[in-house]
Length: 409
Length: 75
Image 1 (spheres, rainbow over the protein chains, first blue to last red):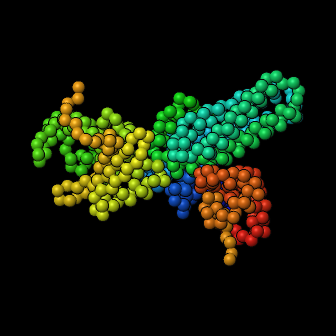
Image 2: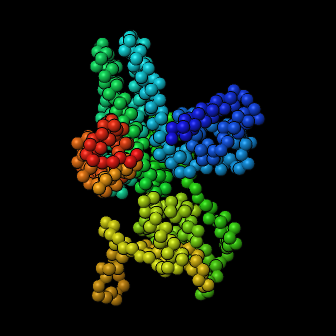
């Protein structure tokens, strides 16, 4: 086992050197032979992983991108083949990717600055060394933003899924760390020669910060990645900028994979009707009328095409499950939490194969009683066209008794 | 019967397979393990080696104790 790891480390080292050489101005052709040798017998995924590791270590993405030219020269395949990340959380801009980058930056701050300056301060607590430590601790205070995003953007979703204890515990520890850093800032500002007390306090705090990083990466992130849907990650990402980031800049916007449904429809031979009318077996309607009718039907309708892409949803006044336009063109499985995807896929499979014609659920949601029905949609020849989801609050209907024969005022 | 503890399994899985390890783990310093909520959430992504690293407990010490109690450890 260890030789594989070492091998990987070795390759990573070479890769780093190669990037360095490119940086110093060597041409692609000069670096190519060595790169070719390096990647002999390994697949694109590993190269992607190695690059990812370098990014995590703090190497700027632009530097890694220099390697693209070399990839292209060496590989017959496309660059996308190498760079297509295997998981969403490995994609720059994904909230978990950002959280992890911050953690790497925090670890670097601790290792390369705070610990070094602590040693210097221990040897001599002169004003210069005191100033260095003060600067470091001020930088460490930026961790507040990392924690704020975690607590205000991530935790609410966890609570929504019933995961309440871990966030509560974690939030408590976050607060204690913040208090510690504030106290240290204060001690540094009014330093009175109590070197040992200060050193111990800082050491304790950086230990707690490191422990928190471990907890996030080993418990929190795996847990939320299992739970949250792509839409929810998007929401978190959209709101992240407002709070800000710790020790890093985030410029890349994360874009989940989606399909342009209009282009897809055209490719499949459907013609846009634009301003004309659509002929039905039972009449004609303009697109405007169709739109109006669908939004007025007292049901929420979502249509997923035969390949599993969300193609349409109606926009009634009181949609039970709010949908954003961002859902159009997304694969339906990405709109659900990973833990329940297999259920969705099973339903889709059963409807598609004809094993079932519909699948119904009814759930209580606050004061609503929600009836959710999935139907297979087929053409006149019985060919599968897609799946229609219809949701409706049936509480008011259930409450109907007797008769009403008079027009309301 | 040989009782095998697979260290690659989550603490949640292990607790279902071998409920008696909960008490042992607790005595070794895994204090959150008796909290059903924590076991059900965090426990589903935690393994014994990860938990040991997090709690700062030497993995060797845990192994020794578990072996003493008659378990076979699969790493």
